[in-house]
Amino acid sequence: MITVRMLQSLLPGMSRVWGRGYIGAGILAMALAVPAHTATLLDQVVAIVEDGVVLQSELENRIATIVSRLKAQNTPLPDRKVMREKVLDQLILEQIQLQMARKMGLRVSDAELTDAINSIARRNGYSLKAFARAIESEGITFAQMRQQVRTEMLLGRLQQKRVAGRVRVTDSQVANFLQSAAGRSKTSTEYLLGHILLAFPASPTTEQIEEKRKEAREIVAKIRQGADFRQMAVARSDGHNALQGGVLGWRKESDLPTLATELVPAMSVGEVSDPVQTPSGFHLITVLDKKGGKSKIVTQYLVRHLLLKENELRSLSEAKVEIDKLYERIREGESFAELARSFSEDPISGAEGGLLGWVGPGEMVALFESVMAETPVGVVSAPFKTPFGWHILEVSDTRQKDIGEQVQEGKAREILHRKEFDIQLQKWLREIREEAYVEIKETGAS
Image 1: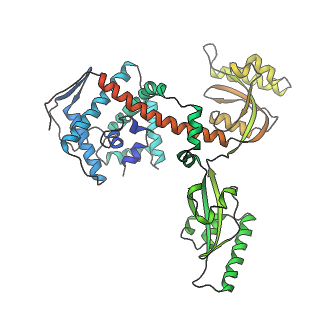
Image 2: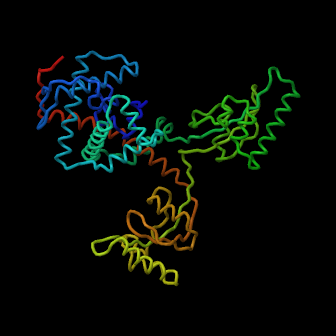
Image 3: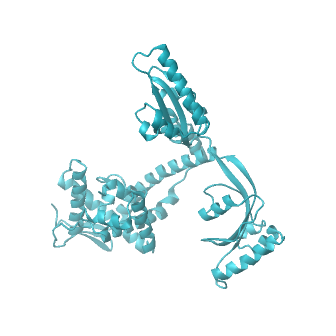
């Protein structure tokens, strides 16, 4: 079954499209055109909005869809008159924004739309055909769903253009947020924990306790010698999550189990604790993974590159021929830096002999990073193509760098930006509603 939550995940921030203050904003955002079972209506204009109109059929179809969704969620329905007013206001706001987007020349290509729909299908374990069947099983045609998603994407782009420029997040705001309780909670380290319990019998004897202690130490020794923690948990743990490999899930530092509070923050990923005794038995804890917090060690590469692009005078295949020649000249001993200065079409790095400086994960396109990671220090890569053109790269050195503080600040800035964006979006939506010419007709009121 296709759920509202699943459809909302098509586009991050969908609920922003309509703003707060409307009934079920997230549900309304995905309320689609009339399902197949809805009766046909004689259309009447219920509102004139600038150069467009809202039709009675649009209003009734949207209300019907919302009612269906609310009933499916066992949510009490609001008064019909209240719902009609709020849904009509939503459609008016949508119409205002769509007209603004058209005047600005904004559009969503078929390819972009297809990529968005493919993405939601993949994330929920569907092929595109299976996703279409699931959508249609709820009385919504795939074409209707595509059109609504296109609308959401278009409105999202409009809002980014009109609202993003109003958002300001200062360094002092970031610093204050990180010092606050909310900031520490949202940016603190999270741990993926593993747990093995060797449970005591009821009223254990000293001998039974020692037997369990010996068994726990043996398991620790095997894990430290390379045995898989999850496999050991399945085979030996008495914990309720043993068949899940002992995985407890992600826990923030403030939410760690009592017995792990002192152990886990000092542990490295993959490390297993010594046995911890409690009245219930001996516990073994491991950190399977961790994220966030003030520590994040990454590999950085000191890299230079040479780029040739497609242009009006040279095709991409001709650029490949030229970069192959430059690659051979480097292999024969010519200076990479000098050739980059003379031939690279990356104007910034080219002036520096192709030097990009220290580069870490997420800073370059995926293929560039893949080649960079696979190229040994002092070796020049074979030519490879990215969306920017043909490249050759050379890795001069590598290092391990703790970028945790930067990541933490970036996450805090993102949280603050999103919060301020939502505030500014509501202001902007109110402004365009107040400034637009809107005439609501009494015809069709119910």
